[in-house]
Image (cartoon, rainbow, N blue to C red):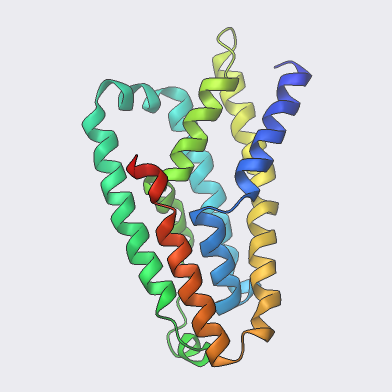
Length: 197
């Protein structure tokens, strides 16, 4: 892959990985509610799951979705329902003591599996593979694009989790935390709007 294309992919991966979406919002909420250290499995699950999704898209799953649109619609419906469920869970966490009594941040495997129903992950993956895969070296370019997403993705989600854990002290007040979680739940629910179109 030419260096200018690799740099373009790097910029694309940074912009798409670091901007708000279902993963970054949930990781930030996890940082607030569970702290940075307990959010590490969630962060790793996001990155590993997305890289696996990218490889599958790059090696042919994207073509299958194009050939069989009902599968794409099914994934959108499942993803939308799951996002609403997660938004409700985040919005209904009232206090840090409530979190401590039910200490369950998202686990690695759950975060990995979430990528398969995450509309932003699909959009990012299909777009990256469509724009940057080089027909003359398809396998090498798919692997390089995936590696770049992995390298950029982990610091991006860690930044959001870190931001959440910094807010943790300020949000120790039950009223503030309750409103923060409600707003985060609402914003997460709103991320399904682009996939309805």
